Image 1 (cartoon, rainbow, N blue to C red):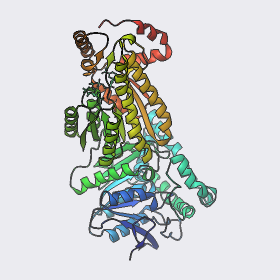
Image 2: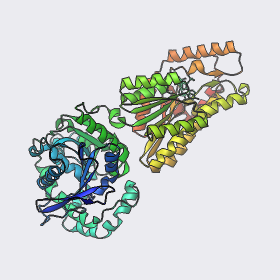
Image 3: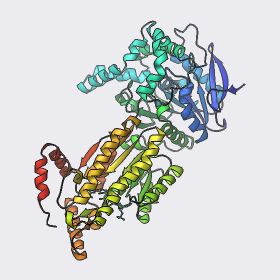
Image 4: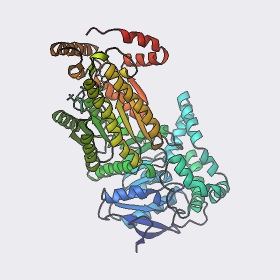
Length: 590
Ligand code: NAP
């Protein structure tokens, strides 16, 4: 019999197994592939509420959640000691899946201790054929962890000792949870009361935490998850803990409890492994539900369709696979190379340019290169209304951006007194206002969503290197650099990174389209040709700038000079600005 649940729209039932009653909630159509979400410590199944709703409503899956024994509305075993072993947790899992999906294997998703126990499910013989795939986040296999420690103890190079110490420091709470009575007293006392506020402040979990009716007792019971399993398994890890289903590993880069290095040796235990990373802290089911639902959907759909799982390797594929990225000025040069680099990493790409044909070509090639989806959009970034329409369409049709690259820009060369107000307006409209429109329209929705993101603004080495030949262009780029720094400060608390990229001379089309003031058309064409030759002799490819952009987003860098001359000028601007001022006076004979 099913009853209404604390999860909106869910049907609830009770499953009896091994002396406990498990509270099981279901969403969506039971005829569709079943995804079982297993929560961690100290949580209840409600930690998955945002992800579950997306998987059921948007992706159309049959979603099943249950309160682990002793948590939420499930009853606790008696006695507690010995009641939380991995073997008993596996019994519970099998009892649940036998009830909700007796004829088809299920897709398991685990977070924290939900992931630790799901590793057990996917590596023991008695669940073989019952699990179609496993998505793991923030919870390693205790067996793999044990082998990871042993390997480092046996061959302790300085790097490996550093890894051991690093994880050891992050595991402080595990030692505390092994002490008798102290965790119970803390959870039933001040810690239990303050926990939702701590989650909000430290982990940036939205709202007032989430509804866990019986948190202090859950947390006190859950201490036995550690006591019943951790020491025993780490001392004697099973030698044959191989995964019998494909695994997707999602690693938040800012996890305070687990080092990313813990998963370095995982390929030896998992023959079919897809790795994903994201810039977030530990509680990603609450802070990154959109991204998790998208990755789970992609993975489950591939496995169900008998297709290979999404790319398993490559640093950029781990970070950007399935993400939504928009690049302006994507019809040529650095913009096109950037769209391709994101496409190669498996991102979904929106290529925007004022030249419709060029944008379409970039989108077509992006699909060929590896983007699961790519779209072309036409807009002039300097036109506020056109940008508003573009943002409205992108948000409605493709979603909120994960990465925005404000790249579109034009060149303008000529002394201050030959630069007309109209020249100034044109260059500022595209180079500065184009960036402002992009940040305002797309950044606002990123911030509103509250699930992080990144904005990249393409400035230039000209932003910090003065020149008598480029007053308008350099001013526009200096403004972009400062705008990026200010916005970075403002958006940091919302987990949105902002980067200013400052290239030097890059071999693109910009030299042929750049305007030269104070000269007639013939002379302007001659100068364009001359600078095009100069840039092609320098021959720094836009693909390298694209690589720097992906790296900058991955590492959330603030200002990135690209090309040796840009890096050199950056150093001079900080430590010997007088030298740059001297160079600025030289009149380039173009
Ligand atoms: P590019 O090859 O000329 O590409 C720029 C692209 O942006 C072109 O497709 C261009 O279209 C498009 N675009 C220009 N104005 C636009 C507007 N108002 N709305 C929409 N699209 C527009 O130049 P790039 O070298 O790749 O330049 C990309 C960015 O890097 C620019 O911001 C530039 O200032 C910066 N940058 C370049 C260098 C370098 O040495 N190349 C150095 C430092 C910084 P059209 O072809 O129709 O103009």
